Length: 231
Image (cartoon, rainbow, N blue to C red; front, side, top):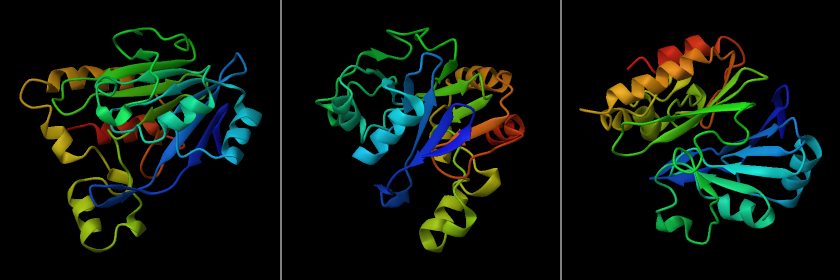
């Protein structure tokens, strides 16, 4: 688990198969003012990782999934930490793949202002008939945390036919953005909602950016986000 900024850590997990494409996994751990930890998009758990989370960020209090396809390891973490509050994004709780996962709240429905709001802001990117995603902003470190809406896969890892498809989809390198098929899902009526969420994200004036897939940004993040979401 590597320190990314003040009170915020990153842990990279195993590569998983997503419709034939290899996707790396990454989670974020934030140490809250209370001395407890907030977990975003948890990766595969093991004793060493759990011990490191508790040592660096404190007991796990919140476990958060940002969208309906980031669910693979929620059950592991919720079983390891039964006292933690587990948050679902819109559309996840209804999926059969989450049978057996205990959810305590859904963003936008049960929790418009979650208890960690003073430290971590959030906005739901709405308007897509495919998927809604919750984006976050850690106020202390001025770090935006964006899941699949912005992907920046390393150039050197995008070889062969699949790499070419990823490039054509606009998901590679410093100019990586949102998958084109997801962009299209905001048409014809949802784009205005997406733009409202984008304006909130830009209003955070983030200095740093963590993405689930690809290279994170340690300075000048607002300009990177604006370019990536210009569609």
